[in-house]
Amino acid sequence: MAGDIVVLTGDMLLHAVLQSGLLRASYIDKYGQQQQAGLLFVVQHLFLTFPRIVFMLGFVVFVFFLLAGYALFHSYLALVNQTSNEWYKIRGHVCQQCHPTATPNHLHSPAGDHFKRYHYSRGLLRNLGEVFFPPQPAKKKDN
Image (cartoon, rainbow, N blue to C red):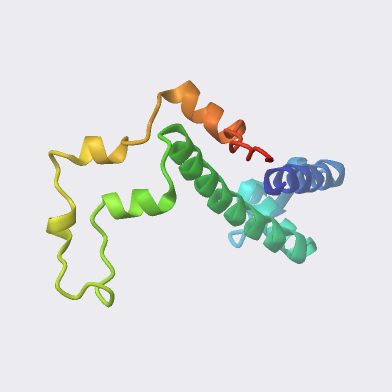
């Protein structure tokens, strides 16, 4: 949805620039010479003409990249059949308040990292099948 908002808002701003003829415009610089309106001039004009829309567009672009990163990370976790909690613990992160004597070196061994990381992995297709078509629990028999 954030990507759609970015595309639609960008399209609206592009049409506003094209209809105003701003790309063919020129201006007189501080040295008295005529300059063609460039990208910086167009962006300044959009900020002055549509400040709320341009700020909203910037915010939505920022949110889009945050959500895209979040979605990619969780897609990776689905591909390797891991939870975010397992991923976090495998890297040796320890709650110092919960375990004051624990050190990250005791939980994280580079040699066994491969086996810990993919302990529940069943292969790419089966992992995705488990995400999209989870196994149904066994039904109890009525006596």
